[in-house]
Image (cartoon, rainbow over all chains, first blue to last red; front, side, top):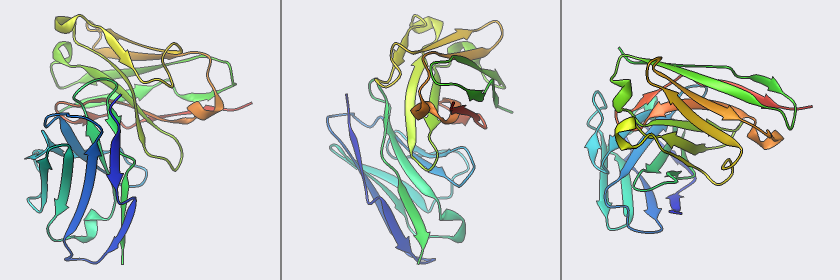
Length: 107
Length: 116
């Protein structure tokens, strides 16, 4: 099974900060990776698919990139509505696997 | 507009069974690989399994913790996917979501509590 190692598990940041979250796959998953945002009590919402393609309606301050088995979600300028928990998901092969999550908190 | 509506959650005793349903609308259900994901209280997201579209054989894959206990099935005529959960354990307590990875469609979730 493919393991997804997500880091950090949490971070504190201020509005306007640049934030980077990383997921590392235990083996090649090509670019079969998505990023999701979840707010308390709500279903997750997709931000990125195919490692770097923005889901419809997602602000352009969100971006994704890939280098080998390392994937990065970047928020270029953190906004108040971005404080949430973020997850990566590999969908290259079953069983699909989520990263452990990164909670982005207000500094 | 896309809708995924889960139902069937509730309180069940350890060792018991429960069947969740997810009614879909607003997209081409027959082409979708339908996925179940859960989230235990205060924990992260966990992929449980999926059922492929009939064009891909309608076969299923499962995560190790639920393989042999949970069964995913679909009724394309009713545009509904099911999650049959048997031999439930306390650690199966979670909010259960149905979703479609391609298209990023999610239901609102249904809570399953396994407790004596």
